[in-house]
Length: 444
Image (cartoon, rainbow, N blue to C red):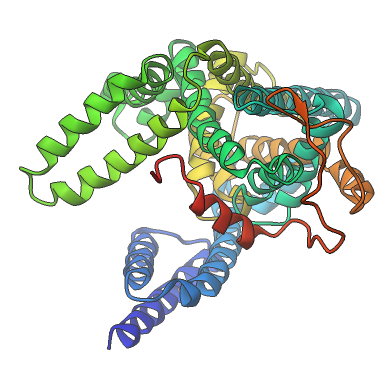
């Protein structure tokens, strides 16, 4: 009965989304289309509680692919004003592209790729520091950096960040045989990485306030700009503060967990919601606890992740210059792009496709002189990021089974690689997920 109801909800989601597809093709995603999107999402999410994991997994993949395709379709066929004439976005983009100066495009496009590569190096450095904090040390350029490039290459063809996160974790554990340590480092890296993005929002918020005014004005509520800015500061600043305090004084979070559990027990549904909050905090404090007395290492890792996300936001400023946006302002574009990056990370599309461009248009169309250049700069930002690191496939090609790092130190001693066998199957995302589940920092 439960399984049948789950498939019934999947059928309802598919039928509703068929209607969404029709409206998207017509370029008429009005109120009815949005209601169908909500119905489709609600039905599909409901089905996830009724179907087992093995059944949901292929359905999730299909749903993500379909949503990505239809989302891009809706975006490209959406009518926009082009000098007083309504045109589908894809036509407006074609007209705009033909006016871009090739020299300007190449010069600033290369600058976008260069700044993105700086961010990748910074992210690899943060991972390097977290591993060192666990007593695991590898050569930075020949091992850590190349693993990052391979991970980004794999991640181009896999959903979410499973390629980058999975591959860097796989190599760190394979050559050190210290899975508990590297899983702990990876768990903490995720918390620190998100915090780096939120710190970027907080720092650029004062300079990016005009973006908030533009968005609220476009939505017909210009007076709500101060409230929205305060909400962004509260959320981004609050999360950043919690993580920074947790990194420096993890005992504070232990007391917070106890308070959450006490309050949650007295509220309707509080046990469930509070339990999730406590589990997140417990995972974070468990990971931080493994770095006792190494605050400097943690702060360097946090700095590295901040630089990573900040430079990613700067990429969109350079892509705006590449397509000839006149009067592009650095700080508003960088601030708007930090919001777009977060929305892209949370979107249910493959590699954020469609969502990235849609949010860039919503946030920065006025700053970038129109919807078409905003969408184009968003798409080019993704292309520039991939082009800067796609050659990681070369390193993957030369990673033969007998390849070993120049050195792998655990607590200062070289390992002997005795556990690596000739029949090693290589990177396996599912096997890695099982290893991570068995070595959670809060498992004890």
